[in-house]
Length: 169
Image 1 (cartoon, one colour):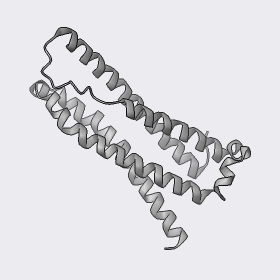
Image 2 (cartoon, rainbow, N blue to C red; image 1 turned 90 degrees about the vertical axis):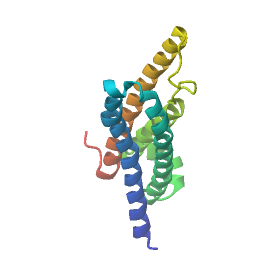
Image 3 (tube, one colour; image 1 turned 60 degrees about the vertical axis):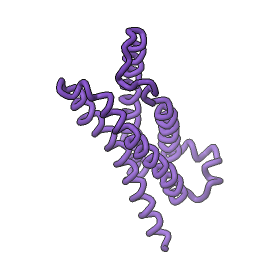
Image 4 (cartoon, rainbow, N blue to C red; image 1 turned 120 degrees about the horizontal axis):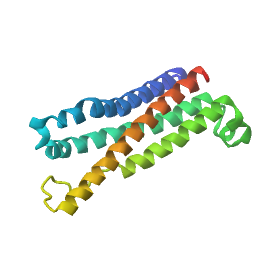
């Protein structure tokens, strides 16, 4: 396999991973959640989320793995060697700065994604007012965290474009 073909395949996988990662979040926010708010589905919303969440999380983690691995490969093709990354001068270049910002945001997104989990006891049958209040508070926090992850992921996409096209600011 030629070097150019391997790089092209890695870039394609990176774009595919980004499409799956961001696309699934956009679908969830723009289609699935509004659908769950419809009065006729409100009673079934907990069940539907429990059915969809495992697949959604699996797709997310597979996408993230593809993104990290292909990102490492892509970076290796764009630099002269890993020793270059260890050089302080690398991080003062436009490429190094943008890569640093992108990697920092990827780390934040990874951590936030690890934290962003639905409550295990949320089976939709809780009757205790205190338990219902805790579940609602958890749902609200999860919603805000999900929005933050999506926003940061969109910024990461913007930085990815800047990496290959150069800074546009």
